[in-house]
Image 1 (cartoon, one colour):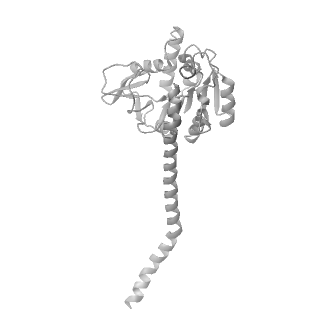
Image 2 (cartoon, rainbow, N blue to C red; image 1 turned 180 degrees about the vertical axis):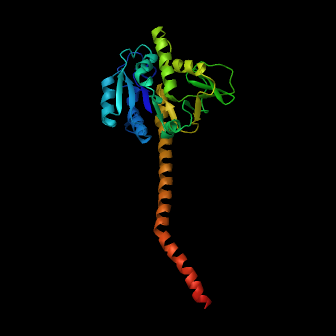
Image 3 (tube, rainbow, N blue to C red; image 1 turned 45 degrees about the vertical axis):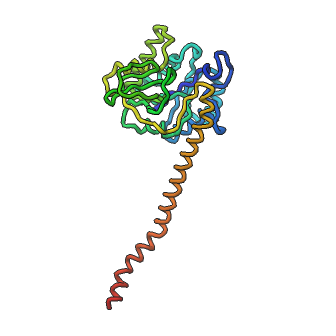
Length: 289
């Protein structure tokens, strides 16, 4: 499985149209950049290649990639037209998406607990969205619509014909076949100069054209995550999401220590217990005499 991560944008909603701020992937939380967190989680999940689409302040991103990732792990893809449309960044990754490998698509501007990504990597669905049922309705969230337990629509503007609706945290797993179709859909929009289309548009094109059931979803409700688009998102990441992530890490570590301690005790005392069990029949026999 290969990863395609989009990190080329200027962060207009966060920093303004004309800005020279660092890319959002270099935002730091608890002293660690989002890119560093992505790399750490991907390595822990056994991923061997990250195709990183860059544009705005690309040298800063490359410098951080060299600092936090093993040599050869990050494959930079430059989108020189990064100011024009996000679908151009998806189109720039066409070679990776058409190679036939499973692809994990990621937004770079998300702070999340590793379990969010783990659910996708280990999902039985070859084509799979992450989905959070706990969301605030509005125009900004990218939505996933479910009818009869199956995905039927996706995007900021969606059909009303659904049973349930949730929010997409920005991660999508695709088989090689579906990844190639998404790449082709992105190319079609670019060829038609439809630069108002977003990369979600290309994904939706494939979702609605494939048979129902082609795409599954993994419920990550309750696992801490946030996309960072606006200044208030940075505050929420710092004050709400990061403390929850750290607390869950601490709880998992405590559980690991407790289980390890119990297994150590069993390992140490099991030979003694076995020895005592061997002697019990002998002692009972002596007492009987």
